[in-house]
Image 1 (cartoon, rainbow, N blue to C red):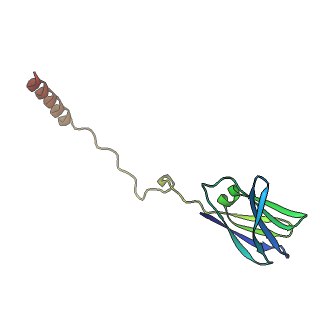
Image 2: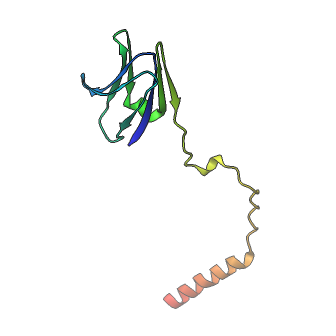
Image 3: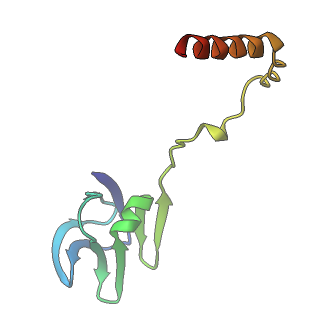
Length: 126
């Protein structure tokens, strides 16, 4: 489950509704200065969240927004979204501590051993 924090700084009561396909239910009511969380299952179907201060001030928050933002602050005239910190899964971003040495030149004796071993294989095979 991915959790997104909703902070109400609007100066009035904030209703948070969850739904899909036009059917919504109230999941929380936040007083001014209140906090709440939205838990989103990444495997669930697409959901929308209505953040309602009054009929003139309604904001839509999608489940994609919940994946991208860790905190959503609602004010009387806008919403402020704080992105999540991304985890690096690649080591290409880190620099090596010391340069890697160049590869050693090939030795000629390795080729002779390989030729001898192939020759002995065929000699024993036939």
